[in-house]
Amino acid sequence: MSDKTIKEMQKEVHDYISQFKEGYFSPLALMARLTEELGELAREVNHYYGEKPKKKTEETKTIDEELADLLFVIICLANSLNINIEEAFDMVMHKFKTRDKDRWTRIDNKEEIE
Image (cartoon, rainbow, N blue to C red; front, side, top):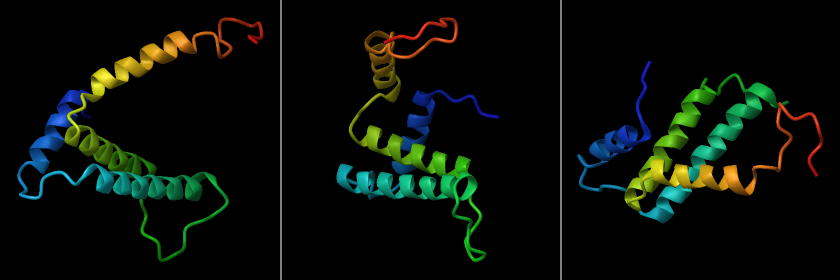
């Protein structure tokens, strides 16, 4: 099992992409790939939890594989735009912990929060 940090994943993806002359795709192309991968994830979730079974001819893929494909493209997009995902994530978590701190009913609080 791997306990890589996001920083390590960003470096690993960068090292991989850097060995090719083409480098990173453009942000717009990466958005198209992100959309494609998200669709593939949605399809797998639908097969496992929805009403649409796989066709006998369809390749077996797992939700983990599709999530990882999505993560790879997200990292490519972040790297191509020089975004540190760990820092961006910390900013988002701060936002949720402050802006939305009273939005949901906490497990330890039985009262309804309006």
